[in-house]
Image: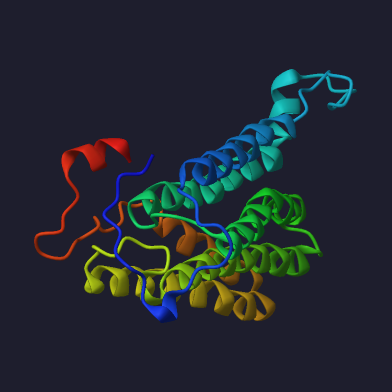
Length: 234
């Protein structure tokens, strides 16, 4: 059970449907992330296995020829991992959920589950005549994921509808700028990818990689910091 000091929500921060804590919400989201990450290695078929490469004379060369598979694995892990880190840290920001927040989160999780597809499309068409289309596909997939993340943020933010009311307003503004600028960069990268495919991909991936770095520690209004019991429960 989440230990929060909740106050009456202002009229413009009305929630919708049953309000719930975040335990089951975060548990389900974590499970989706875990499955998405676990399935990545399953896509790589071992040479000599029923579905893997055959007819090779050197096992080392056969494995080396699977570099596109390994590149896709690393990129998928980085992208999904970056979003999981943000999901994990948001446990100190969100305090509850409602119907629409859960629905938006389902769209976000759908984007997480689907993102390996455009990444693999790009990896398998890198250096081919289809690379420009594959690049736009990849960058568009990353932009869509960023937009669903921002949809959650913008729904929960007004009037601290689902956020901890004790958070300092300047902290919320700071995180809104970070997430908002990142989403805009991802969207702009789609246009860049149309004109210069690899540059667009690099911009989009660097933007995601930024969120692998430690993000600002939540700041609270004076005298309203969470106690040790709350911190340990989070």
